[in-house]
Length: 152
Figure 1 (cartoon, rainbow, N blue to C red):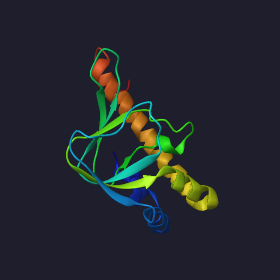
Figure 2: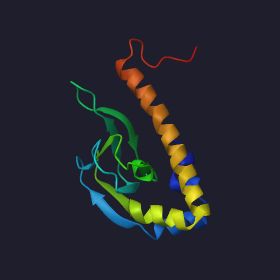
Figure 3: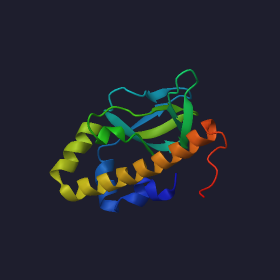
């Protein structure tokens, strides 16, 4: 993921500071699932240390790892859009320390302050766009006859 989608790059300092007031520090052992595809999305994380793999269920195969996330990166965006259901899965691939956020509290803060809400929405939108592109490339690499190839 590019640095343009990390919280510190995407949000103005006052918005980052405001969001961080809702953070609580958590840790996960390697192999721990943060969330599974299809489950309720009620929180999200920003990685402090370690790596988290995003994966997609593929019928008849092991989940396909779409992307690995590290320091400063957002884990989870489905909490921001109804019906608040995870579209991918995520698991720690090493010990992880992260900031965890309660989705409902952040959505409430966004609704109360339209400027803050817009900043969060633009950030999440950038993350979603980048992840969709990464998913496309990875799935083509895994399953297309000639991989992702280049654009013609």
